[in-house]
Length: 113
Image (cartoon, rainbow, N blue to C red; front, side, top):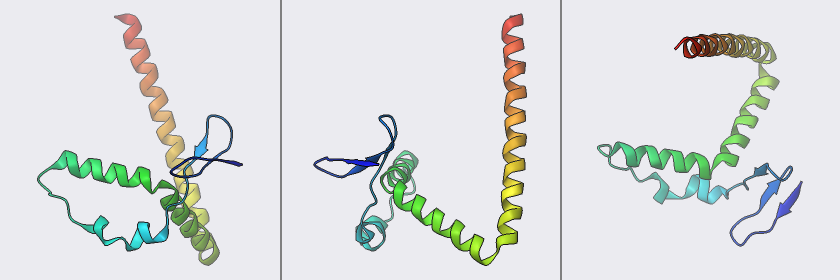
């Protein structure tokens, strides 16, 4: 992976299409108290925009935390982790079957119109 130099941040790219955003500093991610101000709950679009912007801005940090939880879970409870992976795989497989059946039904109904 090669870093691409930018004035604001460094993104690492796997190839020309895939770029990984940089990790945000811990001070900004956790300790910045201005980020914990409560927005107005009456303005739902503003609330949704704030959550979406936060997820996009800190996506590398959230991904790293998720990997740490997966690693710790697999170290301390490997059987539970294996069972969870099997259950998740079955759910994803069944969801894929349901989506493919819905697409076939939609395709057939579209053709008959």
